Length: 344
Image: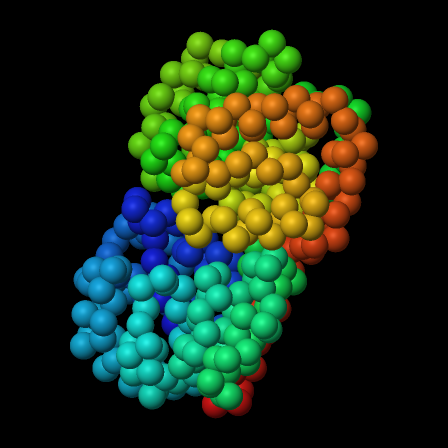
């Protein structure tokens, strides 16, 4: 049994749950049983659409130690099992208590060293062993770098061609968009003489409170299509010529397809991802909304114009991105989790 403790909801988005679902799918393909452990019911509709087994612990995702009283007796009865945690709020105490019963793995994208775990996974572009040199836990193994980006199977070997002319722009801001950046970027691009005639495919996340406003823009502008609960994201990406995206797992998905990226950040945990891509010169950097405000929105529109004019730049970005991510990270992680069961 693989137990996956993941957070997801309106306040924190669904990134943790989505990447764990990719790993769960790979595990089930290997014949392993997987059960998600949730603090509350926020992510239940998503799991049920995937026919994924789950258990609700009736706790606060911000105070996970509350759930140990219910969780530990459950784990004590579980044999040949591994525990995977994907939460910013899991504590050292929590991990140690769980580790008394089975090997523990942790999904880390903040470079936290010294965690009491058997396996630490950090698939971010900037992840390397120097982040964890002073961890102090010799029993920890590491899976680091973009080869472990846990993408869904649909992102493996997607055919993509950089077209001479830009027609479609994909716009996505993640599971939630508390600043309505999708709406602001759309309004700016539609008011610009050079970008107003492009087609815009806007992906609205599951917890985006501004979805009605985006749909209203779509009614006014026939070139704007708004998508929610997309079931074939790789195909939607494949038909687009440029992608405008917030930092996050979507950047690895777009890279596996090869869609040239304009990226930006609007929450702190996106900054390292965006910076890592920017430092490798494989994306256009649109800016940081927290520091620049509406200037970031204007800069994103400027970059759309730039990529529209420069097909060679788009070809370079596409080639470099595809070399970075091959879409098989979830399988590599699943194989390592299975090895932990065998070692146990």
